[in-house]
Image (cartoon, rainbow over all chains, first blue to last red; front, side, top):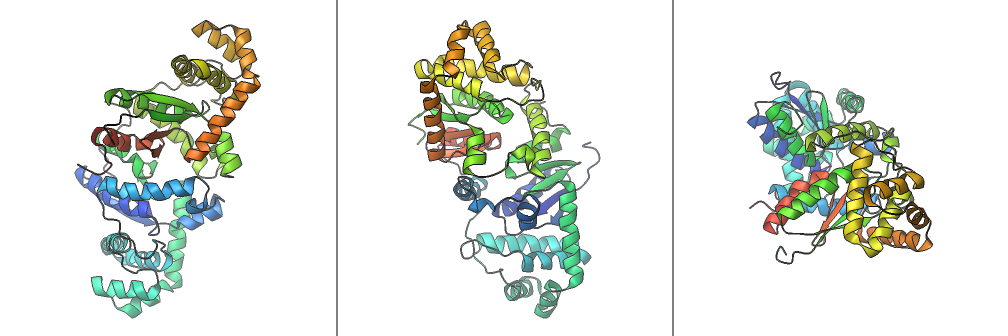
Length: 208
Length: 208
C-alpha cells in the first residue's frame, strides 16, 4: 500500500477553520512522506444540512460551545495565528467557485490561491466574503483580472464543476471538513493526523 | 495549572466502544503524569437524542458507516482486541446502574468493575446486556451476590444517583463519550489524547 504513493485527497470548504488547519498539516505530512495533496472542494452546508439533515454545529446544543473552544485551542495547539475577518463567518461560494474555476485549468495555482485565501480569512482578518472582495484579493495577490473572477463566480460551467465535486464528496462518504483520503481510507478531522502519520510511515494503522 | 494535580474526570457510557478505548488510554496517560482518573457515568442516549435532538450516529447518513469503520480501525490503532458480544449493541442501564451502585460506596471497586465489564463486552464477547447477565458477571468476577445486583439495578436511589450524574455531565457540557475533563478543559474523543498528553506534560496546549 505504501509503495503506491497515490496522492492524498484533501476535501475542504473555506468556511471551516478546521479545514484551514488541516490544509497546513496535511501538506507537511505529505511532503515528509513523498505524497502529493490534491485539493478537492466541497460544501459543508450541503453535506450537513441537506444530506445528513443535521443542524449546523454552532447551532447544536452542547456541541456548539465546545466546538468554538476547540477551534481556538486547536489554533494554539498547531501554532497557527487565529485572527479571523469579522466574526469568522465566511459565505463560501465566491471563494470556492474561484478555486474551482482555477482548478479546472491550473490545480497548482488553485492550491496556492486556496492556501492564501484560507490564511487571509482566518489569520490575516482579510475580507474574502463577497465576489468583489474575492476578486480584489485574487487581483492583488495573484494578478488575476477582477472581471474574470467576477465572471467565473457566476459561470454555469464553474457551478456545475463545483456541484460535481460535492457529488463526488458524497459518493466518497465525506461528511465533514477536513476529510483526508489516503489509499481509500477516509479520515475526518485534524485529530486523525496521528493515525494518518502512522499509515503513511508504516502502510498500516496498527502499532509497530 | 499542572502543579494542582487535580483528578481527571472520565465521562463514559458502557454502550460506546470509543468509551472503552478511552478508559484504557486515559488511565495510562494519567499514571504517567501522576493523576487520578475519576470515572463518571452518563447516558449517551439522553445527551444525543433528548438534549441535542440528534439521531444516533449509526443512523446518521454518511457518518454512520464512517463511524463503524472508525471503530474497527481504532481498536487496531490502539492494539486492543475487538471481539464484541452479539452485534455490539449494549443496552447500558443494567451495567451502568450496577456501576453507579458500587460507585456510591466504593469508587475503586466500581472502576475495577467498569474496566472488567467494558473488556467483557467489547473484547471477550461476554453477555452483559441484561440485569441477569450483569448479575452473573458481577458474581463470577467480583463475588457479589446476584440478588444484590438485581436489586441495585432497580433501586430508586441508584436511579436517582445516575440521573444526577447525567445532569452533572450536561452541566459540564459533555455531549459525547469518552469526554475527558482536565483542569476544567473538556476533550471529546480519543483523537484528543495527543492534546491531553501535551497539556499534562507542559501545563499548556501550545507547542513548546
